[in-house]
Image 1 (cartoon, rainbow, N blue to C red):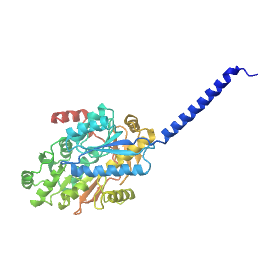
Image 2: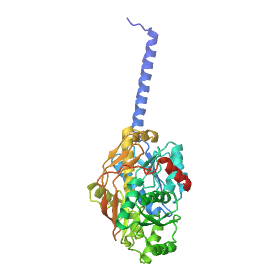
Image 3: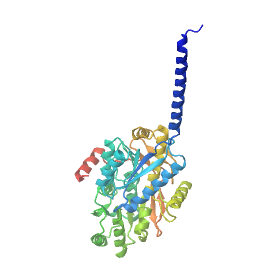
Length: 414
């Protein structure tokens, strides 16, 4: 027996028809929405394209471009392409902080890769902390820092400057001259080196600083001629190195041992560091390594940007930063910087050019090998020493307490 009154039957049919029509419209809309390409994931790049640091930092931008292009060729991340947003710090720390704010607030990037100098990194650090965002920093540095919003893919002091200086003193002698740019990295690095040199019965014969970009080295060269140090430990950054190398060569001092801590293959090529016959560098990677990952990445980079362009440790550290970030995004199924940031509370590792890398979960640095290279006339490093193991990163050198380092840094106003 039909329970519906006869006059309702047309209404029920109409309602069912309307519901079916609405279902078809909604289903079609959902299909269109699902088929519509998702917006790209924006990736910020914060580097100097002009000014005294441009020679060092432009190659890092190129390597970041290559890393993102490779990810896009593999389908991007989360079904979305990656879009680089590149800004110029103009080699100025204050401008870097302004540009970091722009990338995060205006451009809505999901992550930022950038900075070279510690002055730049320290200027942008509070910006990333304020916005609960994430920066990947690719360069060796002076330590005394571990932020929950910065991932450090370069070397810490115990992975570079300390063992590099110790090796130089063992090879050349204990009378050391320190020269550096006048900002936080060289000042703190030389404070660390002073402790190490004293502990190894060495002597600092002189300590000199030059403003970033300074080209006047005549007086310093005269002092080197007068003091005749056994070895020079060089923490100059930027194109001041060019003037320094020119001065050494012009004065016939090209045979004096120099250990440079911020001069990689691109800088050697640009500034003629290969003219110094006893010039050494300390990094975790050299382009001259023969392992397949190194050779493949160098070949891909040179095919993309120029067959004679060199590849350096900071460039590799930039590339590894993108790879580690991409793994975290895939793991979390999200590009949200707060969510991605949580992944680094776990230990991650991955193969890398030269050797594998391992994330130290307690301080967001990488376990890395130490390599010392002798500069060749062609601007490449010939490896003369390498550790047979990965070195655990310790941003605060252990021969002072963390409190002591903080007090010493405060006394320097850094």
